[in-house]
Image (cartoon, rainbow, N blue to C red; front, side, top):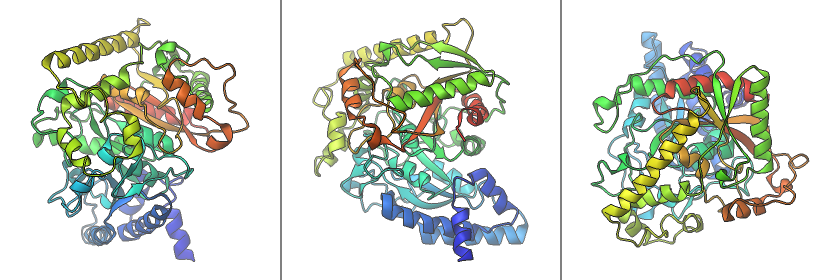
Length: 505
């Protein structure tokens, strides 16, 4: 019984984040074998409830943990800053000896011959991969289900989706299956599942983290992604300091020396300003395209008020028109090329959420894209970048960060999350952004539906029609913090600084 209690305590992610746990391993207070074995057990139990595992790596993980313990015992030194840390990896990233199917049947039974560069960096630093996690069919949806592994459920309510496309990671982390998750973020794919499940999700600036593995884009598109919204690999975890640690480890590994598509990004030891000047996105403007759900608005306003009371300078940020942002991002997916992907999934049933999201069935799917089309899309994208930068500078004094929500909604019922505007906008302008849990939840006794509601758009009306306080009760609430391109260190420093202020303990 005592041993079981010890395992439960070790895997209680509400008590221990990665940084704290790593100190216990490095000091010899716990062994890597004990830690990794405990997380393997918890992952197996939690997976039986939420179905987030695609590839099990328990035996290899425990074997590696024993090797790490031996090294520490013999040398008195850890192999690296992540010595013994149990992590999970999104399915489309390569893990040697395991499939990277991306939720598509045609890509099964083709095990990777080596690790993706990001996985390699984490493993070299001492991390131990316990499992790979589920994704939506095609990785192009905000709810996680495919014909290979089935549906991943929300960690807080099984009637709700886990988000996507890193939905398996979001659910796994929230249920204590690992201490750090490797995800990706093409339009919010790390931040939305993080929000839906109540963990931290980070999208760095583009071309900082190596992003190889199973690609859903056609080959031969070198250069074209520079012109469109930027998809990145991302990090997910239980605290901002965990994300900062992992980000620094990647920079210190100098991945740009191996990957010609990465920008040299040595880690900058930037401290947060004592009182950062934070923009607060105006929630009531029709430019937002969608109203915030009542609980989401409550959480957002509460975060603002806590910052204000703590003495932070808050400046209203008036956004440009958001109504075409998500459609613009979907159009660029076709410019970047998904012909091969489309052919493969034509061999299997298309999941409902993939159809509803509309990426594969948009006007661009059957259209022969011309150079003129690409020019027009890039003009729209350039205008959005100009407008967002102007809004950032509108007060006459540069902001340090921008506070907004991760989505207009909390987690949504299964197969209902089809719009990613509030995360996709930061991919479109390539600003780093992080989703931060507030420690607050939807409350049926407080969060009444709007009276005399007047929607900004058809999507706004559809979303608000889903809201019923009793049904949403208990789902976690988050906010999103964004910074300027390549100011990732500054953003993470500010995010860590304000977390204790905005979080309801």
